[in-house]
Structure formats: structure tokens, C-alpha cells
Amino acid sequence: MDILSALYIQREKNIEFQQNNLLKEAYAVLNKESTTRKASYINYFSNESGSLLTSNPLVLDRKKVFSIQDIKNICIDYRLRFLDRKFYVAELPYDAHIKSTAFEIEAGQPLVFKIVTESVNFKSTYPNTQHLLFADIGNGEFYYICSWGNEYSNYRKYISMPFTRIEMLFAVIFAASSFLTIITPTHFITTKANIDYFSMIRMAFFFWCVVALSAMFAYYIVAIRKGMNSSEWDNPSFM
Image 1 (spheres, rainbow, N blue to C red):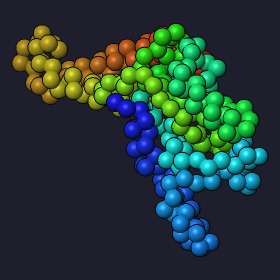
Image 2 (spheres, one colour):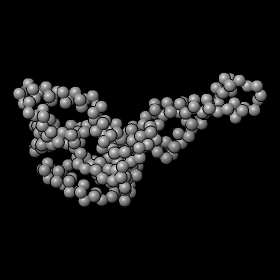
Image 3 (spheres, rainbow, N blue to C red):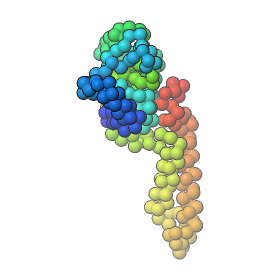
Image 4 (tube, rainbow, N blue to C red):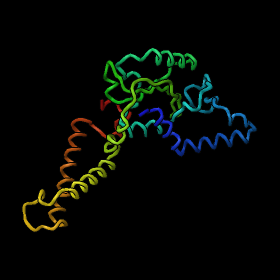
């Protein structure tokens, strides 16, 4: 599973991104700049943009610009972290170092670089799963620099799903409890004879499953994970 591909898909789903594209096209039409609609590169920073790079406008590939909301959604869905480069203990690969340095020289000023990857990679000296390197270009947007490492498992999103948000966790607990209640034979629940399948005993078993699964997930979150994906995706204190 390629995180960068998932990020492109997430961006296309982002309504705000699509609306901004329409506004840019409308602005180009009003200013009789139809050629910019077909261009793959844009003069991204203007003096009115509020960007950190207003002193040195850059021409950037619009396909490599991602909003903070796009990155946040991907990090929550796939249990990843989006942290500053300073929290990454390993050395950057040669290619990533060269590209980030070249981009910083082109910008003409020091930039903040951020990395998207799983939390264990920030603490490991030899991380091997996928990383995405971004440069903070201001206005809550980030420019993709490069990626490295092995792709993640295709099942990562489904494994991470219960921990995306607290609402999703409760939904998974109730769904799992319902499933266990339905498939469990009656003689496993009680030793009493002539008990109907639909009875108060089975309902009590359902609530027992809810309590047991809630306790298990609570222990895992509090003692091991320390938080939900929605709260830890950009928080270095949870590592």
C-alpha cells in the first residue's frame, strides 16, 4: 500500500481542494489567462498569499502541493505520524537530503521539513517502512519532496480503523459484540436446558461482550497506544 497514492486519492476527495481548483480556473478565465489552466506548474506564492516564502516566489508543481487536512486524514486512517524533521533520529537518505537542501536553497531561506511515517520510524536508527518528506510552504499547505522505504501492508487501514476516532471504536465494539452474540451456541452461554435462542441470557451475553471488549481496547489504548489516531497523528509526546 503506497501512502503517496492514498494521499493523492484523499486530495481528490477533498471538497475544499476541488473548490479551490474551480476558483483558480474562474480567476484565470476572468483575467484572460486561459494558458494557465492547462499548465502543470504554477507561480504558487504571491505577495498576498501570506506564505512564508513571499520574499522569494517559487514556481511549484501543483500536483505536489497538499493541504494539512489531506495529510491529517491519511495519518488518522493509516495510523501514521506527521512530525518535524527534528524528531527523526535516523539520518535522511542521500536522495532526500539532496532534494530537501536544493529546495531550501531555491526558496532562499530556512524551511521546516516534516515527515509522514509510522511512529516507530521516528525512534528507530534503521527504519525500513515508507516515509514521505514535505516542506512547509505556509498557508497550511505542504510541498512533497520525496519518499523512501518499503510500502505498508494492504490491511493497515482496516487494522487501524478501530483507533481512528472514539466513535469508530464504539461502533467496532458493538459490531463485534453483536457478531459474537449471534454465532455463539446457546450451550456455550448457559448450561440450563430448553433455553430459547432468543432469550434474556443471550442479551446478557451481548452486554458481557461489550464490557469485555471495551476493557480490552481501553487497556490497549491507555497502557500501550496512549491515544487515538485522531489525537496522536501530529503529537510527538505520544511516541
